[in-house]
Amino acid sequence: MKSNLYLVVFILALCVSCGDDVVPKPKAYLRLDYPKPDYYKSNIDLPFTFEINKLATKISFKKVKATTESFGVNIEYPSLKGTIFLTYKAIEKDEKNLIDFLRDAQNFTQKHTIKADEIKEKEYSNDLNKVYGMLYEVGGNAASQSQFYITDSVNHFLTGSLYFYAKPNYDSILPAAHYLKKDIQNIMETVKWK
Image (tube, rainbow, N blue to C red):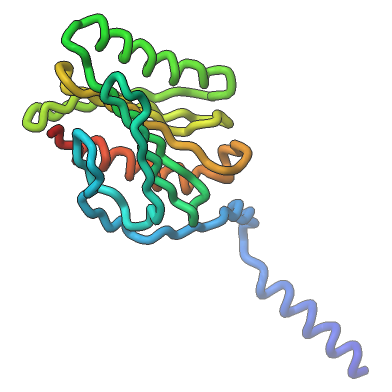
């Protein structure tokens, strides 16, 4: 008799606890929280300055060519397993040099169309600091999720690209790619030519 009473209570509890509509649960996503960016002005001996996130713990640079003013800068984020690679080139006093740099920067981004689902372009212009350029956001399993170039159209040309130390799996690296895209935008916005 006791067992029948338990069975009745169990069935009543089931009926009372059930709601009217059955609603499927949404898919769960991994939540990655990164610290709020804390930027400081670079003190690297380059023909330009910019701000760097303190999360970037290793910054290295070297002169690329002895004949012209050209530098490579690596901004490494070990905790995100990614690096922003910057390349600076001085524009020689002819227009063809600038056109070649622009073409190379645009072609570099277009090489990612093989693996990319989409490439979003965003123009950048800062008349006060004479900084003009383009930011490319690459969607999909491409090797680099963000690239950019900026120039003053007279003396300076800077390109940058973001790479991760892992196989490009867009869903997995998306949070880190979005975080570092903001750092790239900050670099573009804070560049001041010397």
